[in-house]
Image 1: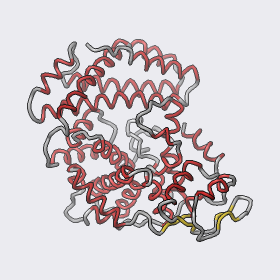
Image 2 (image 1 turned 30 degrees about the vertical axis):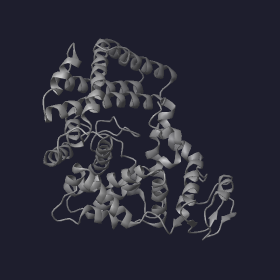
Image 3 (image 1 turned 45 degrees about the vertical axis):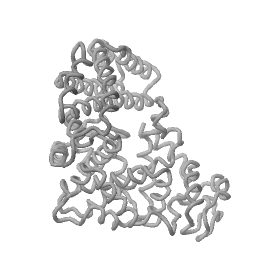
Image 4 (image 1 turned 120 degrees about the vertical axis):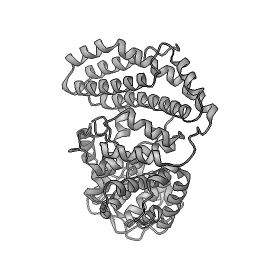
Length: 442
């Protein structure tokens, strides 16, 4: 998959991405964006002089030509996302999320919100971040949250490496800029995506890498971190499927963990409990030192162990526990079929099935350990949540995490299926359908 995406990018080199250009034009309607240097076509035609403003009238002209230099490298704006705005938003997020606040506490370091406001951003990077933020207020919040989490973890796990801390914070701010180059419908969370669509969606980290590699204020070190923000140590991440600490070093793990943690906070779940449970549920996604630090932060984090909306949370969790139990029943019944498929599979599909099997076995073990793997999981769930305080919160958080992991397995399998042969895709889809077959309430 990675090679295919890189080949496509090479073929498009010099072309202006229409989706990025649409975001740019929309931003230019509210803020002045200008060329910081002449924008010249590959054939030497000056398309836009330095100092000229970007507007909708230029859209078609820019799309008609390949450029000598990427468009995003040649832009700046006078009213972009300012250091003060980053610092203010960081402070808001720290006050809103106790886990993030605890993570960023450090006796000898400058306050995290202040540090974020002092990060150096070149004019092209500032413009890129501003265009990304224009997609919606939640996008800038996400970027700032990941930057804070990455900074907090870096200070704990890489003490004294000030430049490393700054690099990780900038990577957090810019990790998702590749989303600007995708068709907007691929980013909608309310629509199911098929294998080919998933392939496009997961390419955003590769696109971010390409954009940041050569841009002023970017560079290879930043780009190499950003491309890894969805990788996992056990090989189940994307887009490269990196495995082991030799391939996924601690700085990249920190960024990936920061992105994951902020996703928990944004989900509305009890992030403190959820983070502690999740690090135990799938051991091996991150290094032991990082996981131990996350557990310490979770345990030290002050704040009520309460569900944001208890009635809604319990109502939402009950069908999930039934569904997870049904999928695990199907998994146990399908073990012989999975083993047979692995024996006959191509090397690529065999690696995928080995990862799938490993994850399913981890989930099955954890589900059984929680006492939910019975003939009547709904009854056991009811007994657990009838207990007060932490037990109820932990049970609901556990079920949410199980349900998310099930969806993640299907999503990752579909994403990877796009690189297989038609025969392998059919085999993999058949296994997924088998695992999902027994979803009737029990």
